[in-house]
Image (cartoon, rainbow, N blue to C red):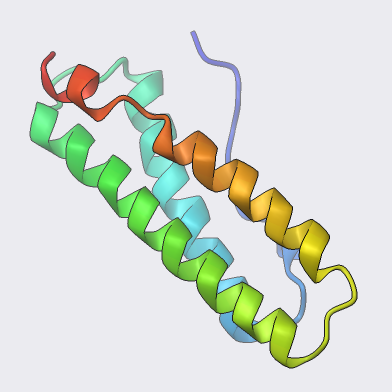
Length: 104
């Protein structure tokens, strides 16, 4: 069984309402995936798996673009480092093998 819990905590907030709301949305999507894993996808149609993984990919892409543009606009000193972290996370999300999930 999986042993992790993905919940938003207020101390994760950075104080920029728009970014914090986007982070909460990403946590919600990942929490939905977590629930599928915990239940071992019992009763879940392949299309549902495809939809949620696609939703995560699209939202992560949108959020990273938005956040990086905001950081650049305000001259965030660790922009390059943060952008590299985004790239690693996005590559990880892209590695989800959708055909494997949908063909189950």
